[in-house]
Length: 216
Image 1 (cartoon, rainbow, N blue to C red):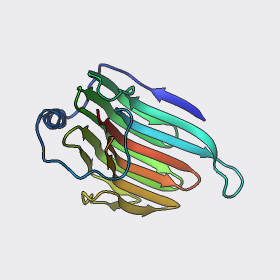
Image 2 (cartoon, rainbow, N blue to C red):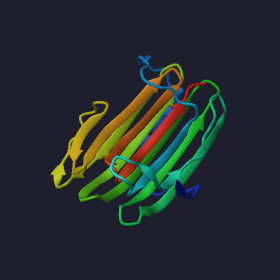
Image 3 (cartoon, one colour):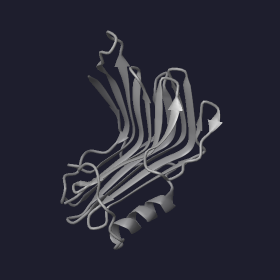
């Protein structure tokens, strides 16, 4: 598999300050505990986009494809203090996706971690499907009070405006696949959130705004 990464640190173009304030508030405040479920995370990381184009093969056979990552932090191990940041004024995956104000951040403390990924002006064209959104964001918090949150504003899929319900794993059928909103995994090892996950079977797998926070 070929992997290309677009990464630019120290920038914060178009990033919504009130979302960052909310994230830091979650990190420092004592929230009611949520019931853990599903799987664990081993590191904390955030990325605005991960898009994989699959190669054509024999029927029923998936071959390694090409993966492009836009605005991705490095991984922060559990229990390690630190802050990671990555931003792009604009980014694209040729013939598939474009967006602006891409941002990803991770904050780690000894007893908890938080991460956030966001972007604006999303435009996608995948195997006959058109998807657009004004703003997409995912947040994850681990520790004594694990939590996950996503936001998608102005989402339109194949000409139909879609209203996110807030439900985990909300699905919208698309040509040849599915779009999943607010995809979350919460377990003893942490929290992972993907705001928008687009799957076109045998063609592409695209994660938009992914944040993971590993438990210490």
